[in-house]
Image (cartoon, rainbow, N blue to C red; front, side):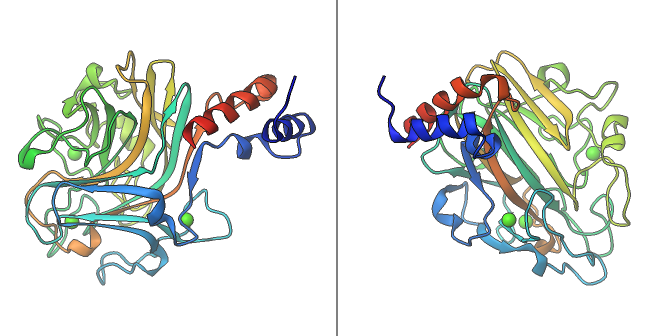
Amino acid sequence: MKLNKSLAFALASVMGAIVPLTAQAQLFSDNFDGGTSASNWNTYLSAADGQFNFAYDYSTYNGTAGVNTIPIPTAPRSTGGTTIGLRMAINDTAAARQTMSAFPKLQSFSGNYKLRFDMWVNYPGTAGGTGTGVAGSTETAAFGINMPSEQAVGATGASGQSAPANSVWFAVNGEGGASATSTTLRDYNSFLGGTLQFGDAGGFAATGTGREDHANAYYQTLFPQNISYQTAGAPGKQWVTVDIEQIGSTTTWSMNGTLIATRTGTPITAGNVFLGYFDHFNGVSTPAVDSFVIYDNVEVVPEPASMSALALGFGALFLKRRRRNA
Ligand SMILES: [Ca+2]
Ligand SMILES: [Ca+2]
Ligand SMILES: [Ca+2]
């Protein structure tokens, strides 16, 4: 049997535990700290009024005086207290519904794997995106896996927006501003292609009425109001760790380790991952500077996470996948 250098090193690493398995298993990662991440991603805008900043120092954000006064801290999975991330902002001047998405370049993932990232959804005003001089706060963070093609991903609708057919993806706002009965946008959104899925079709873990709304007890428990400007039941203005995981043909969306939605029998089980942001409404939010999302510590890892029993075989599989993606 002929072993190439990489495989020999991987086997030695696995058997000798020279390199931690988790680090070795990572299929993709970006913590943005080097300031050069723009070259790692393809970006797509449905219209001109969107800004990607791949080297944003979020510690510099002060917000609007008297409203957002607490600095954004380092993301929960950062090391060394770094504060560089990916900032997306949209519809700050155009007054038109728009969407934007970023895909890591030349990546495709299949089998059992997980997209994990830290996310901060900001919004104007105080709890619920309200306050003096505050308007149009509802903008929405979007993310998904197994995208068969790349584009600005959005709900089918105005300005020709759409998503790849049969893709499964998710979206959430920061301040719970979507109506519990809207037919086009909720606070917690589960999509098939460009079409919003409700209740059981969306696979929501929350029960009772308003299964996609921030007022539901499930979300109120997950995101309790614990600082003065935070909206109970919504993930805005705090760091949350998001997982999108595929096992077989089942895709799950979790936030801070709590299941939000489960989609079974997904039609597409391989493809790229994406992070995005959209404004479902025409109106520009006020103050526009306070409406944005920050992503940090993005990684794609194979699942299951605990690989010790399978380490030897998995090391080889990982190398095969890396070569395929190279
Ligand atoms: Ca970072
Ligand atoms: Ca905006
Ligand atoms: Ca709501």
